Amino acid sequence: MQRQVSEEGPLAAQQSAEQSVTALAGEVVDHRFKALPPDAEGLTVGALAAERRNLFTGGFTTPVLALSAESVEANLALLETYAQRHGLAFAPHGKTSMSPQLFARQLEHGAWGITAAVPHQARVYRAHGIRRIFLANELVDAVALRWLAGELDADPGFTFACYVDSVRGVELMDEALRAAGAVRPVDVVVELGAGEGARTGARTEADCAAVADAVAETSTLRLVGVAGYEGEVPDATPERVRAWLRRLVGLAAAFDADGRFSALADGEEILISAGGSAWFDAVADVFAEIPELSRPVLKLLRSGAYVSHDDGHYRHLTPFNRIPEEGALQPAFRLWAQVVSRPTPEQAFVNAGKRDAAYDLDLPEAQAVRSARDGSVRPAAGITVSALSDQHGWVRTDADAELEVGDWLGMGLSHPCTSFDKWQLIPLVEADGTVTDYIRTFF
Image (tube, one colour):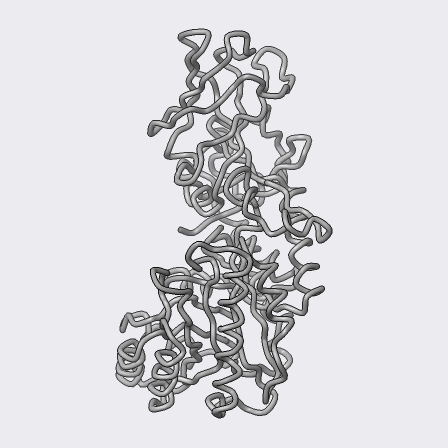
């Protein structure tokens, strides 16, 4: 990666992101934002946050998605500690939240930078002060490459790297960057595919070498490392995932032995990156085995779902289930909806559906009921979400379940990526219901 002078390092990146967050507080609250109190219209987000309204009594309308302030803080701290303990750098995948406020918090908690998947996400990051971006995809869009060249040439403190996984991709990148008159070369890492039938990535070490050879023939690209995504290993088991990660490490060592990282300046690091949200323990184990190379190694983890965790998919998949001694993530989302119909003792309907809740992996999980009569909160015993329509949640109840029209049903969600993207401004709520901030998203 291109080396930065001290004032362009992590502290500068954090300060730049924090300045952007301060600016977000000046946005005006209006009809664009679901669930916010109607009487808050015209206030700035910062002014509304300063009022510290209660989620249940402060004028919010249902459905409303809440993010636990305590859980977010605990999750941020846990991954910071985990990465430090295992000698890993950390570029959490920003596609999960697309929230500059959470990016700033992640940088504050030690993140090296933020990972992106597509050019739009990188543009959002740059607009909000992110100085280090790892794009986990091959970038062959000529318009996006022209924009990237302009960003790199205008800002010597901007660090960027992306995947390459094909000779044709290298040709397209080179052509677009030469046409754009790019001055700084774009840093690239060769992506090793996770196996036959997996997603992207060159399938064999020979294919990877051919891609690296193509990069070496250009003046617009610079090979700085290797990367991949172990979450795509077919029929993944701990043994298969570790075997693939060892292939990735072996590829880096072979490239280094062949002098393929000669474009790196003295002191610059070879980048080796993997690590989604399901197997980062395996990444930590195998990256600890990386042999001594000709240059220092940046061991870059990219897990993103940890910031909110969930009550479904990642609750089952998190590596902390295998390594409980390292800690535990806390689910941070709760979607509150109101019971609007109770047609039979076995059936109820709430006013939240597919437009409000993630449903691509698991249905919401009924967790708590807040009484419309006295505000008391009780467990959602005998209550199950059975289906979602666009704007209704279908709720199955035991015959003796305590639930009536007007009650609020609190639900846990599965899959953070498709929870964040349905809400543009999300209340950050303390355990007693006090709203301390509003998390802006940009999908």
